[in-house]
Length: 204
Image (tube, rainbow, N blue to C red; front, top):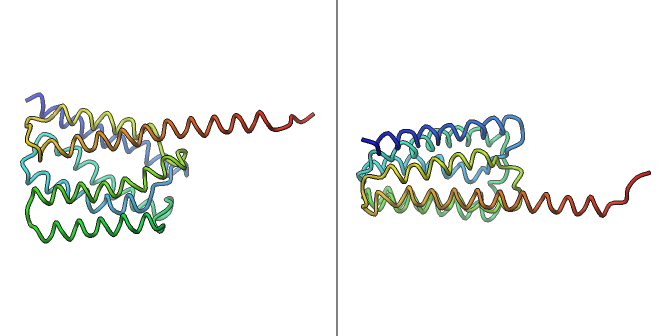
């Protein structure tokens, strides 16, 4: 089936998207948000299993790829990352923990999916802030590739059931917002630096 092939391709691209991200981290250019990847490392696994239990098949590969790589990046964030201890970070981590507790309590795959997505979104919140304030600490190329994978994942859908459609669409929206913030903010920073350079007196 075409959708199955597209889903696998989306998963592969999603995994590949993190290669320049990890390379950039090791070079000291990208500084992963610790709170974000702490949340995503746990929620990624929950989303994968709950999404699978909700009936998705062709579109689970992207979720699996994200879960595996997010755990690895969280490990790297201890040495190369930033953040994780601000008030916003702690609120998001606390909310994510509540989502996990809800998942354990309900034992319902559909509710677990909703709570997992909510918790994962809380991981996006510190990243949104970081992407706007410190765009150069993120790798735009990786996020653009990830967005392509997310869009392909939507085309891999074989069902219009809400529980199946929800996660792929949600990821497209969030990844799209990250890319938009990075592109806009990097342009803003460059423009500001250019203005400052023009105002500085020229040396003889």
